[in-house]
Length: 223
Image 1 (cartoon, helix red, strand yellow):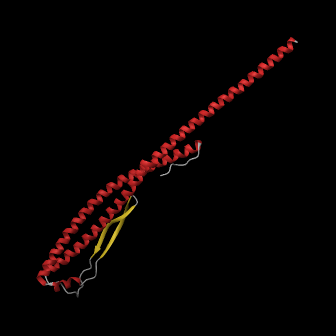
Image 2 (spheres, rainbow, N blue to C red):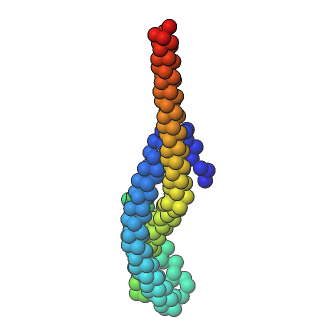
Image 3 (cartoon, rainbow, N blue to C red):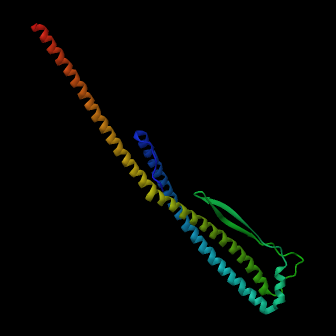
């Protein structure tokens, strides 16, 4: 990161002071955003873990009922589970500190048609219900995971920006401002010295001229 370039004098100092104030406010705002995102991220991670546990549990139940139905009716019996329209999944969206992410997932499993062949045994009926529940749980887990990842990625990005400001840009602005203050102080001191010397020189010339006039008047009086 290059050092800030500013014009010399008071204009440069004012620009540095403004840049430093902006950087400090920006770092403070980003730090607040980071705290809010971390709190929200922890909540989303808990939701993701809970949704993941529910998904694994419902998947296990569906596999158990599917195996029972397969043992009772054979592989041909599984054909009856495909006599329906495919399920649809829709996500609702929200935002956290400007980060857009899924809020929830709605899964619609179409009912079996009136003329569709029913499952061959009760185990397959339960398997059909369990699979629909597992699909809903999978959609909810996908939404929770996507939300947690989106907020987590924003946390990493915001953390990098805060560190860049606090560890690099702000210290460089402070150092540049300190140098500008020192240069301005030296310049003002040099100007004051020059003015003092100029005043002393003017005063000395005035005294010399007064003495010269006095001596000339004395010679005229003596004559």
